[in-house]
Length: 259
Image (cartoon, rainbow, N blue to C red; front, side, top):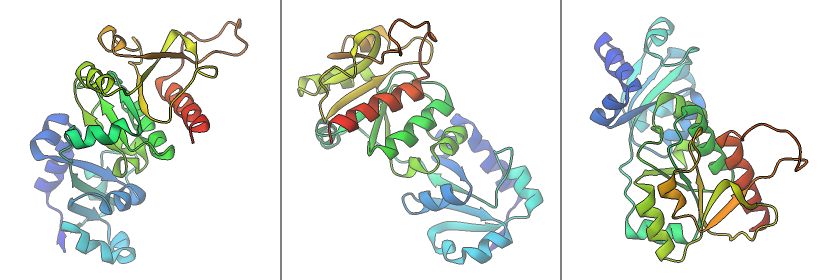
């Protein structure tokens, strides 16, 4: 096992930027849980850890292309987190395409689509809650935050290893799903009360941008408009819900009624 070099520390740190993640085809995961979850699901290029971590996880050496020992001081320089942990790894970014077979699967399941959700914390939270509710695929517009950005990966708490994320122009994708007779749901202030509306066990749930909501172009592809009512109905409340919270409420109601 090698000691890590300054050049490699610089190369790994560059993966904090999207252009270098795309160039290298790799992303960073930090911490024991995130690394272990991804080791069982993705190709690991480099595994970097302190001596104490290696002593407790010696079997992990066979699961990575390259393994390195690092001092706590160098981990401080390498880590993309404010509070570095004992292990960090780089993994291959999966090449995911919306093939006909994938669309066949989506037509028979519940899927979340994100229309320009740009906050990394919100995206990570949504990936995590989809993992909790058994939603295995998320479709994102090209301008949605990068799911392999360090802040997003960290916020998923390991769910990025189990939930597949695709990026594609949403209007075209949703129009194709409508042609397959797949219901497309979206949340709107002028929608129908979600608790009184019929919901199907399969379909696409569209959630919109933090400030603008669902875009006009995507809105035209929505077949069922839903509204999460405040309580009581005539109370003075906040203008809207955080998109992560709104997604959790919506998905939970689908799962509650369509087991």
